Image (cartoon, rainbow, N blue to C red; front, side, top):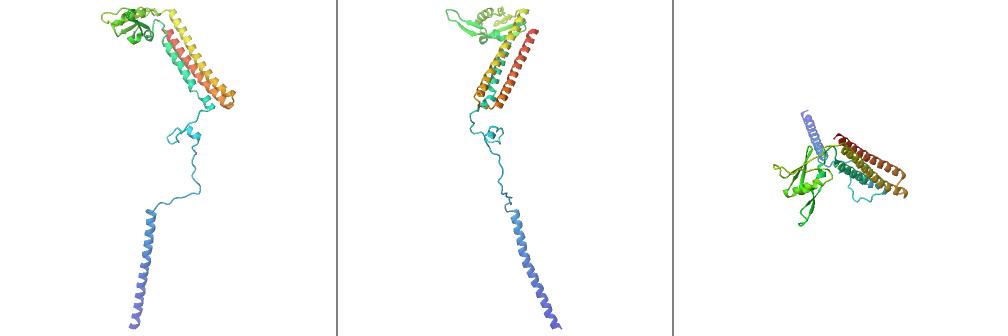
Length: 279
């Protein structure tokens, strides 16, 4: 019986060892395969999803380039000549002419005199003759050789050289503003005091009337600027180079700009009149 049992036990042990060896042989390739998949997933290049349709990009055409306002917008290479439509919509020259009229109005109103007050710029703009007939005379602007400082109802003319005092006093006395300069005092030998005449009703009325005429001139300048731009629109309208809708829109925009100019002229003129009436 022992002889029969020994071969069976040996057979069982040999079969068990062969199974263990075969399982180890199978386990090793599986581990290597899993490690290969892990390495390719983590360290290899990422997979990309492809589409059969190409990506859609906005075409950088002429219209896009003309409206490029950000850094990400395509740069404008060569801009073409302005079209007739561009010219009738361009109000830059019209606005510049209106601004010039308003600046002149403001400057002219600042020169007006009323209520015994005188703008220092008027005195500084007087012409002064220097030198003598034998040495030769030279005409200069008073503001170039002296400074005018208002002090209440007196204008102090501060001279840069005592040799100019006599000539400056003569120029002030000969001006059409009814001014009488006083000789410099000993403590201020370079300062000429010019008392302002007392206010009268006539001077106030004259100043207000001058302000009215000045505002009318400014309105006329604004109107001439409108006529110039309207001629441009009319030319393209007769030549039929611009669509009728664009003509109407350009005219409407022109009238809006002109109306703002007239309103600004009126606002400045009314403010100056109130100041002149209160002096």
